[in-house]
Amino acid sequence: MSLKKVLVTGATGQIGNAVFKRLKEQPEKYDVYALDRSATFSARVPGNWVLNIPKERLHLCDLTNMEGLQSAVQGMDVVVHLAADPSPNTWESVLNNNIIGAYNAFEACRQAGVGRIIAASSITVSNGYPEEEPYKAILEKRYEDVPAGFPNSGQAHLRAPASLQVCGTLSRSLSFASTPMNRSDLTYSTVCLTMTGDG
Image 1 (cartoon, rainbow, N blue to C red):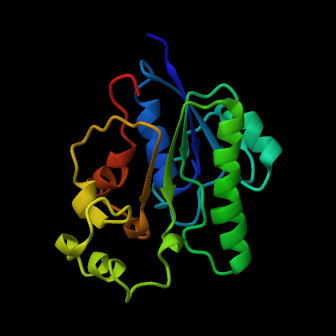
Image 2: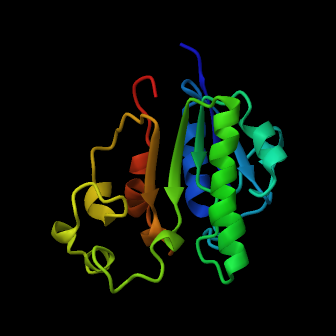
């Protein structure tokens, strides 16, 4: 069985680095690469974490750089797109990192023929709507009031079986991951990114 070539974007961020490390721990299954705009951790990463991404596996590229993204995704079987600005202070940051950047990542994957892309949306998808349903229900942890299949349905849906077959695109907002997490929280944050079978 050949190894799946996987690129993790946002690999120097908290969630991205956790996913990169988990895939790297399975060398019999995955040939893992990383992409980020910096070779240092983001400010949200706990201070005791150690960045262990080999230079030859790290693509330094901003999400607005389509040419760089196209080069990074070339030859990949799977792209785990986690790069975004989780706490944007300006519209320019939302636009460049979370809208244009996401579009560029998906478009580069389409052009390169990447078979699968796994994407996590940023909190800015629902930011500004805390008083509207179903977001209010999510924030109040009234998961029974959230419509079935709603994409930002909190930990109720993240406490799914630990293995998922990923087909096409899986999108999940990780808005609850805006604070440092303990190990059990991290399990629920990345469960939607676990690949099994031939995925």
